[in-house]
Image (cartoon, rainbow over all chains, first blue to last red; front, side, top):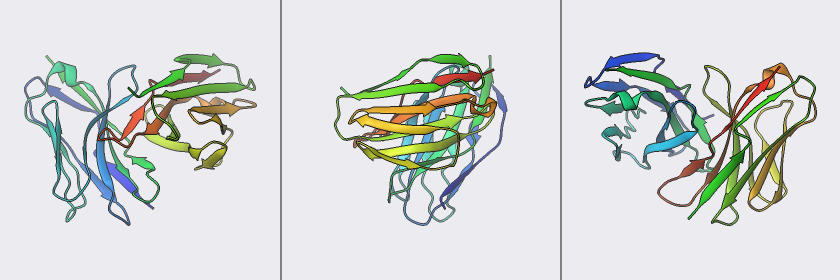
Length: 112
Length: 112
């Protein structure tokens, strides 16, 4: 079945540092890929998405590119802020039934 | 606009007591609805999903059940809670827009 493997955390960074969170997937079809963010005490919010190979999703300074050849969707941000502290989830959507499969989540803490 | 409501936000229940969590969606019709659980320190697990009134698909065997009595209402229930039912429960619906899935704010359930 479909699955997502996500870089384990926790990750602790200083403000303005570069952030990368690795995500790879296994899928039988052609899934859509997502990054969700969960701020402390809140539900999940969609951060960005990509629906086909070579698509780049971007939002709030974060970017991720759908790489079919490496089955990856790594999340990057060039200069993080304290407000980026959150749990980040990589996910894929099965095009057959639209169920979401999530990675385990990566906790990111940014220190001032 | 489309919104999703989930309540209660937090709940503390004794072992063996019943459970009812409710999720409602506004501004759309015939949505796909989903219940996810996030156990402490773990990722999100799909529990149930529904593509229409009275239609429920269960992803994992467990102590919980789901019902969809109305088009925009999705209920998660248990007759007798177990300690292992503790976690963060999220309702979601699949919107046919660029936003993809929309999640409710979640219910933090602690079984004591």
